[in-house]
Image 1 (spheres, helix red, strand yellow):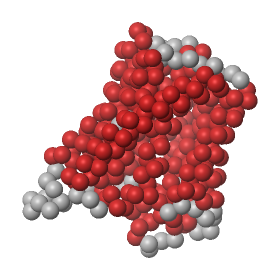
Image 2 (tube, one colour):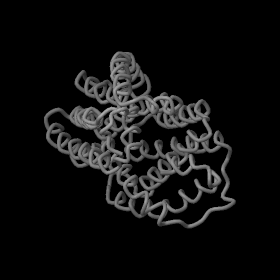
Image 3 (cartoon, helix red, strand yellow):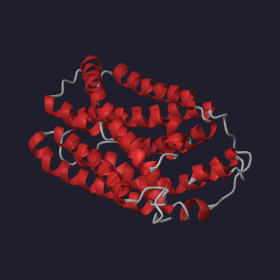
Length: 329
């Protein structure tokens, strides 16, 4: 919704971003309050992690609007390095420390992006709950569904494994999650050109990206293994690495399909798909973790990611092509 408003050019981008942020933050804080019920990590740390992630994500539309992609990539790397530096400096894997490192990493990323997009200041903003809540409600649910589809495994694992296993899982899953984010960062500069393609050409491009992503996943997984051994003294088994690798591949393709689904006004369809993936993630994690250990959570993540890709692919396959006379608006 913010990207749509920015493209209209009728409102100052800085004012629009601040209005969006100041309207959402109080409600986001309320939604995050249940996190304090998790005894393994102090509620304040979990709340800070959620708010920092929201702040960082809120700046991403301004990156697209200002086309500061390279600077934003540097901010992403700075946030990741800050997180790794904290974990390496302490030399321990503690759930509270891991979550705190994520929060600090997101804060560093947010500051970097804020500088990259021109340091938007709160010079003029308005309280606009109707526009940013009523109109954006499907987008809010899409975001919530997407969050659950990638992080519900962590919440489920907290009830199934001990603190040491949970800390190891958080580190391993976090590294694979960084690999899932990478295709989205790389495709952002090319999204305008990709969105001008018809559905068939776009899906052909997505298929090529899926193949390339699969090929690049092998060296990326080896890099994850090296990082885990060198910095965290964690040696995951083959099942963990295989599940993590399979969870990374679908993002290479669906990062170019999901914007088209949204562009066609199918927010509710994407919302349902996100919650379906989250449900699959929770069920598979509950079933497999008692038998496979932390690999079960990664297998759940892999199934959830492939569900998102399959849902977007199926929807676009069933649509008539752009040039068809019976194409629905």
